[in-house]
Length: 274
Image (cartoon, rainbow, N blue to C red; front, side, top):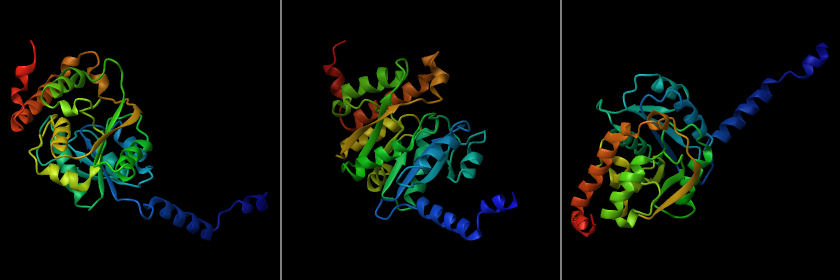
């Protein structure tokens, strides 16, 4: 029995070999672009760890930044334990998704990446392929920006269906074909993000649609990438009462109207029959 046990003992040399192999596998492959993934988060302790673990498995081996909007749960603690860098919004505001995104983006650009990817942090069924597909659209297909689209529950996305898409059709019809104008899964070249940071992007819920409109008006090539079915935790908070999304709807609508004024599209309303 002692001989049998000894036969299965792992030598120190073999352990070192395994560790060296692991380190090599975890490093980005030579020739791949440097990718940084930013996860805006506020009180996402139930999903943030899983999201980080999944993103690490992307073939692009991205570094990960969690842009925290002053969570009161264990979001930051979990993110740091999983190996993500955590940055905190400079102001405690809510809604503050836009501010968190801008804070995370500035931190990401300090790492001199080729591509920065945003992913929502409340997703329960994210896969590494989500990151891969978004980045592939830039690296392989040559687009400046890729935007995730997906199947969602029929009663999900009321702000997208009833506010964003309708107002975009009125004021910015050139982007009205995008299925998910408020998607949280967006990848773009670093130079695109640098230019967008110079725009007056909203601090709240309006940032997603502002990114879409400003990118279109700047002439960037954009593509929607199908990611499958999206299951996100926040949906359960409002599926029984979409009225809880009232503040989001307001901020998205005002953002589109402000940009319509900026780009002299506001008179488009005169063409709509009422």
